[in-house]
Amino acid sequence: MLTILLAMLVTVRIAPDVGGLKFSQPQIAVAGDLVGLTFGSSNNIYYSGSRDQGRTFSKPMVVATIPKAMLGMHRGPRIAISSAGAILISAPHSGNIGAWRSTDGGRTWSASTVINDSPGSAPEGLQALATGPNGLVFAAWLDIRENRRNQLYGAASTDGGVTWSKNVRVYASPDGKICECCHPSLAISKSGEIYVMWRNNLGGARDLYFARSMDRGKTFNQVSKFGTGTWQLNICPMDGGGVAVDARGEITSVWRRQDTVFLSRAGQPERALAIGKDPTIAVNENGPYVVWTGRSGLEAKLPHDGSVVTLAPDGAFATIAGSGSVFAAWESQGAIVVTRLDR
Image (cartoon, rainbow, N blue to C red; front, side, top):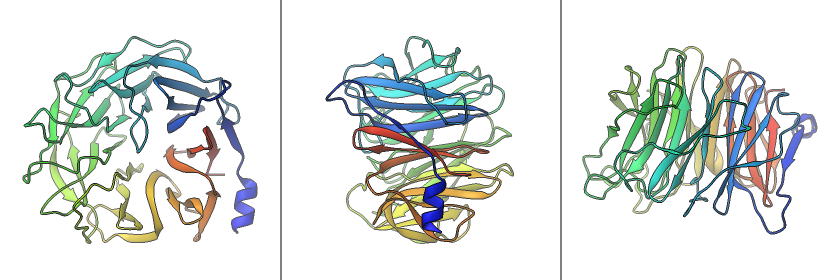
């Protein structure tokens, strides 16, 4: 089955055309036939898009050149596509979270809008971005405005990313801070419910929690833990996992505990998938698609196959997106590789 699956996958490689450059930290978004991709190199944030379901991608263009751009270990740009077709990219720089917007398919981009309303409050550069129905966009990030210790903050846009709300505290740990170097994850249901996932720090345990907003990001409640196990750890593993919501509004997450990747639905026991790290997830009508870095390189668990398969022996820092067609992208020897997984 492994050989058959790999033969079916058609990959597109996006590489720098200037010697010495390396592309890294890709993020991907899918809306209909549009597949949008963002990544970074040095102080540049790039965009490349496909209008033919990922068969070809446009030449990477620089969205912005920013001082002190943060790349590596899940730091870097994020991308989302609004219900009206606007492409949004957010990226950390100089202690802030900036956002850029394109309404012409990625050919031109707006000036940067700073999302966090407390200047310099996001120095870790760990953030998430997602879109929902009727122009809803939500961003979440690690924020130190309270006593210089990381809590989870967010902001909403109801006009497709043109303007942003006053920042809201999504969660503050009663022990003083959440896990300080793990990125948050975001998912928004078709009805507009917002789910934010983060790695907590409670009593020395670094487990994954989520909060839900029923009012388009104004308030968050129903804080819950994923899975039944726990991980006592004195340092941050720098691995935040991923979260997705299906067409029925059911939430599924994937994360690392110790050296194992787990999959869980809210309120249910976790299920061990494999030895690995840096997992990411997307869900369509067939079920969850999960990719992670494992023993043989970049590995995957797909709905139509019961086994773990190898996507790329040299791949790392994968990202997945799509609720119909599902695409994955990852780093590979200074280039970005993209493939469709639901074929």
